[in-house]
Image (cartoon, rainbow, N blue to C red; front, side):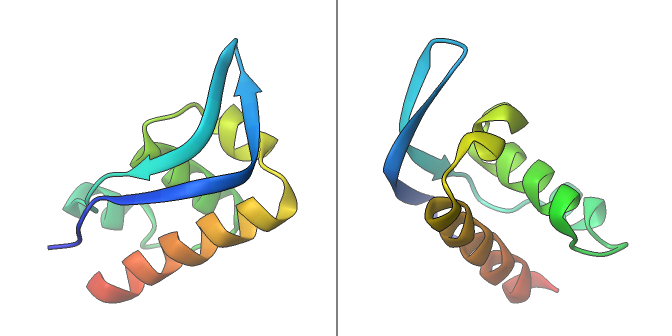
Length: 83
């Protein structure tokens, strides 16, 4: 089982009046894996990161490039463990 992960953001973002200093990713579920079977492109990766962090996709789109790359790396490593 993949443990819950916290990814601190170097550049916090505010979306809909909520400040996000970190993203807290939950464990990967079977339904998450099924959602990316067709491929892991940018849009699917953004949707999956938002789903795992329980935040709107707007939060992922608002991340600066370095934070977005770090989140994308972590999500892809989580997928590597189960695919």
